[in-house]
Amino acid sequence: MQLTRRTLALAMPATLAALIGAAPAAPASRPAAADTDRHGPRPTIVLVHGAFADASSWSGTIRRLQHAGYPVLAPANPLRGLAADTAYLRSVLAAVDGPVVLVGHSYGGAVISGAAVGNSRVKALVYIAAFTPDKGESAAELAARFPGSTLGDAVNPQSYPLPGGGTGTELVIERAKFHRQFAADVPVSDAAVMAATQRPVATAALEEKAGAAAWKTIPSWALIATADKNIPPAAERWMARRAGSHITEVDASHAVAVSRPAVVTHVILAAARATR
Image (cartoon, rainbow, N blue to C red; front, side, top):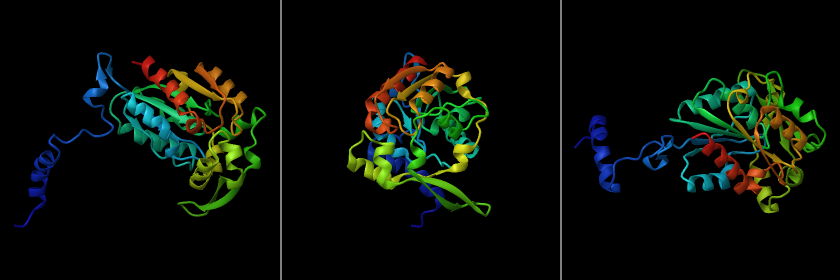
């Protein structure tokens, strides 16, 4: 018998239900019944990584948040330009139903600050060893405002093709320096994997000035990594105080989400519970 597209469309739901013994599951971004209690739906936690990292850096945090019953999403941050990265994150948020707690690490803090502007579903912002820029400020400028960063001595510039033609410049941390610079409190073998899988960041992204800042209207939390060698801890602390964030400090490297996922999770859950 020839199966038409309509026949398949009609047959598949029943077939799947028979195979798994239940109706098809709801999309991952939609809170399930278990995610709703007398306080309403639990927010979706959206985790945005920063430069020289990828979404896997949130793995320990994701497991803990899911165990606590929260829906989680950790999209890839393009790291090509602040306005472009912010627009991409807005498109990700548009596909998420219900309230959101938006979390950014490092350069990801600048991205969430812009992406949450005008989005009433974002109930809290969480900055993890992150930039918290005001309008007109760049990540590069903020990192240089206080002493302590050794990133400039650890990165190599390299060229990459731009979509419209020409070339751009991106930065990569030298593998031999990655452990000490980025993740000193992570086991050497794990840091070696992180170095091999690091996502380069375009210099244009770090130099591009931020637009409006969502932290001016949305409650925020900040985790300061006091052993950070990428962003000076004094800069993280100054930005967090300026934003009026609820501040937690921990003795950790810039890769605090990898080395101290329990602390990172604690800060995120505090934000999530305060907004319900």
